[in-house]
Every structure is written in structure tokens, then in C-alpha cells.
Amino acid sequence: MWNKTYDFDAHLAVGERLEILAMDPVFRVLGDEVGRVAAGYGKKTKPAATDAVGMLVFGAATVLFGNDRAAHGELRYQWPLIRKALEAVGIPTSDRPPSPQAWRYFRKKYLENPELIQSLRCIAREMWLGLAQRMGMFPTQPEDYDWLHPDHRNTLFADGTWVRPASGVEVTRRGKTQRSRAKSGRKRLSEDVDVSGANFGYQHTVVSARLPVERMRLIIDIGRAAPSRDVKVALDSLFWAKTQLGDRLRHFAYDRALSAKEDITRVIRAGILPLCKPSNVDAFDDWKALPRHKIRNDKAIAFSYKFGECFHDLCFDAGMLWDMETRADGRYYLKRADHLAVRRVRRADGSYDFEVDLRLYCSRGGDHTFTWSLTGNVERLGKRPLNLAPHLRPIPIADKDRAGPALGIRQTAEAMFRYLKDYMGKGNRAGSFSALAHEIDMLLLAVAHNALVWREYCQEHSSQQALATPQLPPLAA
Image (cartoon, rainbow, N blue to C red; front, side):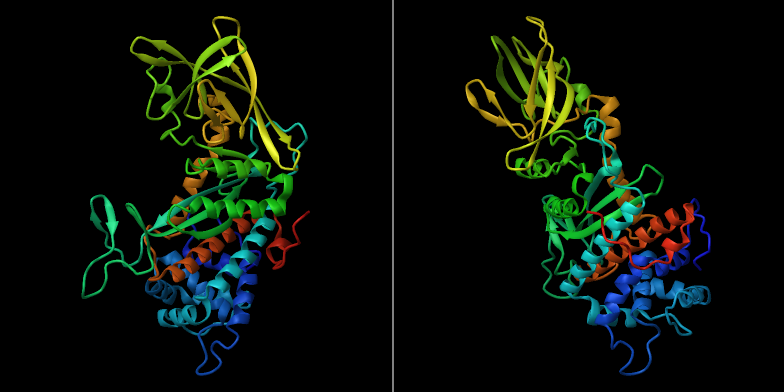
């Protein structure tokens, strides 16, 4: 099995993915951990169809095939081939695959424990971070690192997504999803789903890293998030990774949900430059409608500023600083300030800040060149100082040569969910009927995805020894 070659450019059969999963070093470590918890499984009454590790393989199959009944039917048809593959890596089997009832019993009795799930998640993310480093992610960067041209090998990117509940039939009233008010019969929504506006179901945050090679996207962490709390889960994972990687973690990419002053400041204080879309921008090319047009009073923040003896009417919009022109019918955008350089500076307390060198065109007395801190305040004439963290982005989206490569990794986060839901078979609806069971499904899905990435990497690099090594070396300091 270790020497088998897979065609990753083609669409792998689910049976092939299960073979790769059964050989994966991270999966085997998690299986051993579950095996200690479920040491008595299949020993008290009649023999079980397989052991705890084999049950986890079946659990992953229920996710890849869509649900447990579909998994049992497909495995029953393919069982001679899959059974041979499982026994080749030391997983005991019988002449039949596990039944859906056996999986539900095993999951409820041994796995549906929040402490166990959290323990498995911690073990997995530490090993995944080790795999990422062995694959060449998070290299050491030179002292003169160019922050305006981010190296995405040193970037963590994340996003949150909603999955509808298995029994969900939405009840929409006035644009919001409501719980069923039925007094009898089966409820339309599960009791433990989250409801947030038009969203309902289960929200998870996936934190990933990648190499600039097709399909080399590795999930580093996955966790359930309460409504509107996906950023918190992502930041918890980010700061944990910072303790493991140190200065090799340089960037964090998220969508415009990362817009609060406190969250952005925490990321910057850790020495990490955030790469996120401005909060008042829907599409990356929205800024093209700004020059020579009237100011968007609902989105722009206008103020007056003094450069020495030169007064300017300025505004922040789309994450950039704009000079404005005052006309009889209002204010209009003129030119945006150019971003010349971004520097990371050490503060007195040992934390970090980022400074941006800006240049603003002035027709009266020459260009104005100045430096602002990304977490500092800008003095506004006649108004309170304005904190820059939510309003000024280090890399302007109008600078296509820099913003395209730098911010494009955000699209990778979106593509990751499409991949998990489409190619990996998760779909848009949960395959289990409770939040805890769905959390187990998502963890198994992440393990199965990373198993494919690691196997392809080892196959490309002819690292058969790495394939067969269940334990990984500790992370470098």
C-alpha cells in the first residue's frame, strides 16, 4: 500500500481517499487516542465489524458519501477492495462493513464528548502545523523582508462558513430564519442549531496554509464558531500558531469581518500584518467608481488635516486615504495617497507596530510625504482623533501590482470551502442530526483532506519513509 501511486490530477474515487486516510500518520495518531477511550468496544458481546480506528474510517466515509446509510451501501459494494486496503495497514475487518447503527452507537458512546473532541483537535492541529513546516511552509525570512510583497508561505488564511442542519426546513419571516413554532410532529429545525439573521445551522472557521502549488492547501485548524464569532475562533488559532512558529508567521488573511479596531490591533501587536479587505468594500474593484465622483457620505470618513501650513480636505474610503475637492454641490474624490513602504517596528513593551510611508499629491506646494502608524491616531481639525486600524489598509486595493498577489489569498479561503463541500462531498447540509455529531464530521473531513495533501506531497517527493512515519518531530523553536 505504501508504494501505490495515485493520480491526483484525476478525480480520486472515495475508496482511494479512504485508503489514503487509513495510511495517514495524523489519522493513525488520532485513531490510537480514540482507541484508548474506546478500549472496550466490541469485547463485551459479539465481536464488532472492526476496531476503533476502523470505525473512524467508516465515520469519514459517512462524510465523503454524504450520510451513514449511503456510506454503508457504497462500502458494501466496494468492500472486497477496501477491506484488503484496511487490513494491509493493520486495521482489522470482518466480511462486512460496519452498519449505520454501529457507527451511531460508537459515535454516541465514545466520541460525542466535547473534551475528547477538543483534545483530538489540539493533537491534530499540532501535527498539521508540523506537516506544514516539513512541506516548506513558514520559512525563515530575511531582515529586509518586503512587507508590501507578502510571501504567502508565511501566511495563515481563514474564513467561516455555515452548513445547514440535516433536518432543516427554513421558516423565513421578515427576512429572518425563525425556529418552527409547531406544537406537534417533528420539529423543522434541530434544537441545537445556531440562528443568525438569514443564516441557520452550524458555523465553522477553517484556518489554512498553502504552498504556491496546485492543491497544496493544508488545513491547520478547524473549530465551531458561535454566530458572528468566526473571527474569534480564527484569532485564537492564529495566536496559538504564533506561539509555535514565532517570527515565521508574518501575515494573516481574512475577509472584511476582521474590521474591529481591537481585533486588528491585537494582530498587529503580535507582529503579524493583516491582509483583509476593507469593511466598506463589497468587490475588490469597487474603488474604480470613486475618483472624480462625489464622496460616499454613508461609507467615507471625511476630515480636515493640516500639513504644516497646507490645509487639505481628506477622507478614508475603501481602506485608502483620499484627497478631496470641494465644489458647490459637495465634495469629490481627487487622488489617493501612494503607499511607499511598510515597516514593522518594535515597541517599548516588546510588542510590534506597523508604519506606512505615504505620499499625497499637492498642487499648491509640492507633494506631502509622511508616516502614519497602522494602530495610531490621526489628528482631525475640529474633531476627535481617529484611530487608523479599521480604516487604513497597508496595501491599497487600487495598487493592482501589489494588491492582486497580496490579497488574492483571500480567494483561496473561499475556494477551500467550495472544495470541501463539492469535491470532498460535504455538501451544504449536515449529514448528522446534532451539533456535536456534526463537529465530529467536520474534524474527520479536515483529516481526510489533509491526508490527501500529505500523500500527494510525499508521492511527488518520493518520501516513502515520511508516509510510513506515524510520529512527527517536535516543532522547531
